[in-house]
Length: 468
Image (tube, rainbow, N blue to C red; front, side):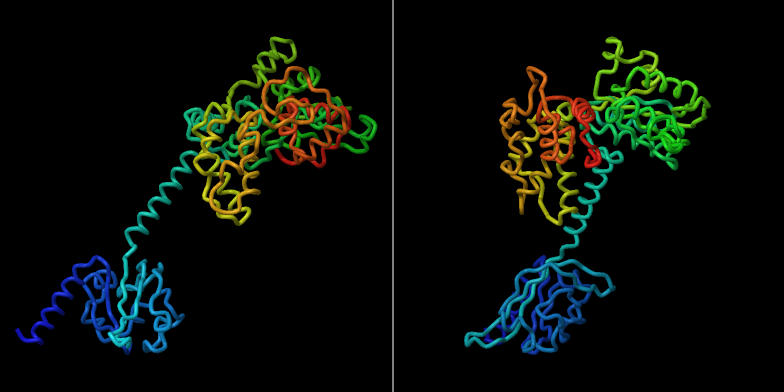
């Protein structure tokens, strides 16, 4: 067999091997002209070998190359200096005008004497991978939508029941009593009900019934006329009038005094109010949503809450489960807080490591969702890159009961006796907690309502408070 024939057979054999490859392969000569083009290249680019051979690779209009602009020859190409390029994701322009995602790799080919004889480039088509990635992102988005209701998140059966109850309440104008522990999201539920209702164009007015003494709360709710009391220098609308046509959300409803309970009952029955210092009645068109972390029926039995008002408020009750009762929602909530803090801080944390997530799943979360959010934010301060590890979580979560306030009593757990505070100590604690009353209450083992009462008793200002 002649040498020429042998070489021809070798070339055909090599070409057949190249054509069998799933990756696109083409070669360039020393002048930068395409000399070979396998079948996969035709599939990826739309150009047949006859269309490509003899042309330069700038016909493919790669979105990334060694140089910003493809040179006319190899001598000007940065590939010559480097000898090869690292695999990189980019796009090429298909013959029909659309972009094709690929991984591009290139290497200079030299002869035995070290002289450049050409370049070989390979392309891996990423179209299916990109489509799969897009489908996964769409699925994750739909999953998020399925497990999200307004600002509430949960895939547990308990939360799905809550979502259904919110939807039903939004379609009604009945009074709703929202019950659940501190930090479970009662105000979020009230907001969701209002925005689903026909009253959504009108205001949602929120009043914390535990934050003000009876005299101030009466004026806050019902308004007052000039001269009604010392300091009443002008007429003032109350929250009920401000919310006319909309919704009033009464948080910590269990803290109402008997006197305010009587006045609220009239509002529910007659839809009328009287400003403080005025005998005239004013009609108001409002819907009442109320919330409490207490067992309101137990307070009725104890004579601390009017039974008729209780039944007026709980026309449609909604119970929010504690986070420890829906542990399967912890990963979903943690991921949501990580995503939100990534956007806020510019970080790119990948979430929680397995050990950190397992610890979060095992923890009792006495502060519920609010405490979980605070824990993730704490971890963001310590974690710079990668994932949130166990050591980034607050100590009281890693070692429950180990953190103590200056009382010498564990942070979590049932206190054996009421805590005695003084004004300076409470103010110091509030500053340490960023004026989060719920967090301060947890640290000393009392209720948030008790913190409000101490603040009211000692005249600790509320103007520096943060939204909880």
